[in-house]
Length: 294
Length: 253
Figure 1 (spheres, rainbow over the protein chains, first blue to last red):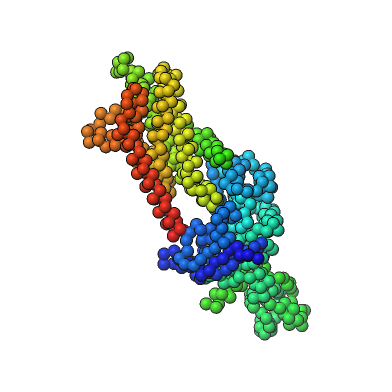
Figure 2: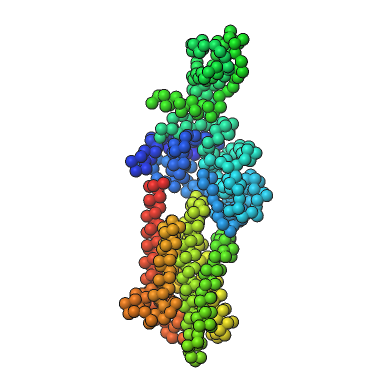
């Protein structure tokens, strides 16, 4: 597999403020990479650097081996919506297609972006969610190999979001590489091949969700009990333990050993819940762990 | 080429055809001025001089209309492209930057052509002005070519990137420029020192070239050279500022 994105020793400052510190990563073909981080972590700055919209202070960035037809092969869905007056959806799509040598066929484009019913609507009269669909259509108009999606589903309703991620899966199966940021982590969980956590100016985690689970705990076990917390403190493989009143919550690498340990007390336990840790809680745990390390 | 024509077509509809502001501001305002000062408020002018006055004022209003279109409409349209994020969208596509500006310049030239023809038609049908087709065509053609430096001024103002600053610069430039270059009233009515400044403006130079065509006189090369110098100076400044802004954008988000 050849490298689509190659970042080496990337540093970025705004004045005296350091935003990104010594970033190193590679992205291969046919992957969906989720870049996550808290607000202000530098995700959009990193995307803008990859798109050559802003410069680095040092380090190298190579996209598609700096091919001459780079812009023909990249599609970008920016965080901010485009809202032009006096132009219809169909016109802006056809106009954008005209910038590319090999654009996606128009019919396929509106089908993928779910815009069939909005073709003749004026662009500035679309709702926030509809504008995200249009931004997506504009991003894929050129039939790109590499797609950057910055907060793609912000403002979309739940049905549209589900359909959107199905489309992303379809694009991946067509050998597209997709680099996505989103605050809706539960959506990324099902689709991303690889998670990158941008925190403290650098990529603090880079791997699959399974690897993140093994690091931050596979499962979460919750129950209510009037038993004393000391009984549960010696359970092995506990990553996080919370006790508020009668409520207990454990994040663990090994749910089975935890269950074995609490089995003798089952009569004194109610509302027992065992579930696989979501990306959302893994991210929270990761942040907390990182803060504890500091 | 077909793609480029398609791009021009869509942008023409967006910027001119569906833009009521263009028809009201760039076309109707000079037409109203023209009718007012060539038809209604003409009681003191002897009948023998009236036709010449109507002709001369027609030239002034054509250039005034092009001045409004080239500076105010150009600056606002390009600023709108930025605030609506259309500009960034086009930068992320393979569309070359020069092609973006070329398509806009062609549209703005079309805009000036439409308003020039509109004002000429008012002169023909309301004031019964008669000129040969060649003279009408030559006046319009020279005016359109002569407005290119004004379009560059509009592009230059749009680089301020801020609606309040763009509006302020538009107002500070357009109306004083119209006054001192003698588009609203004869330049001889102004103090000598102001006349000497007014005679250096591109609108005065263009007006004089058009007047020469209108009255069948030889065009003074000094005015042609003046317009070329304006074009080079403003074009170079625009290019340098664009490059500087690109450098700054890359450095500061």
